[in-house]
Length: 277
Image (cartoon, rainbow, N blue to C red; front, side, top):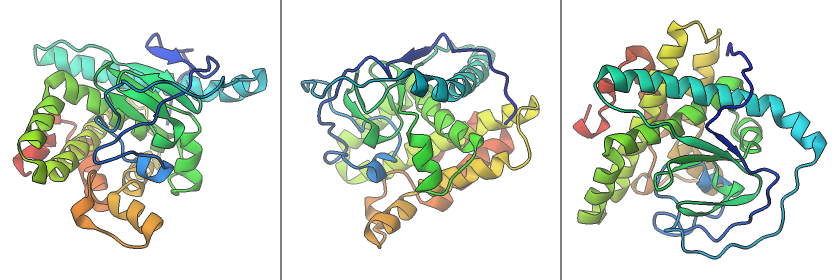
């Protein structure tokens, strides 16, 4: 991906050296306590925020800080670029875009949704409108799940920001209301929410391509990352079998297809996963 280092985003909150700690997170249907299951991105994976904190100080040595600074500036660039894209889209539609914050942490921190651990992977908390990310996740995405490349990392950020877009549009709240009314459809509704966020990530990728930000192979990296975190891929890797009824984020094929749909059209109106499209 072509990007220019502009320093740190004004919407970046760096907690990597601040210590903090975390409580036990509670996910949809139970606690999410492993890295693999935590790769399930999106809102609602944490508790209501009433846990007590625990854990000790998390240090960030000068060497660690220097080593990670290029990555900090990269995620800052992607965050600002994606938010600028969505701000323009909201303005053209007569709406108001409110920027999200991105919190970088190490090992554990507290979010508006409760305690957060690195093992949970990146996520968006609608209660404080912040994205949470431990930079170590990107190494796992590459080494464990076979999705290398800077645009694979950009896809992750764009997906989480897609949840922020859903939040601003009230989509996530409508989904939660529908899940409460019909618990039997909760997983299916969750899948639709996640696939829409994948499509929104593709819409940003389309914009980035039009502005000359993408290089050869970038979209393949994004498609690979979307596929790598499909429910079937994760289940097969962790349990050796696949249970479609327990899907909450969509299959590898679905996730890559919806990302591609957003990228090819560049139009968020084509991301209506709730209309059966």
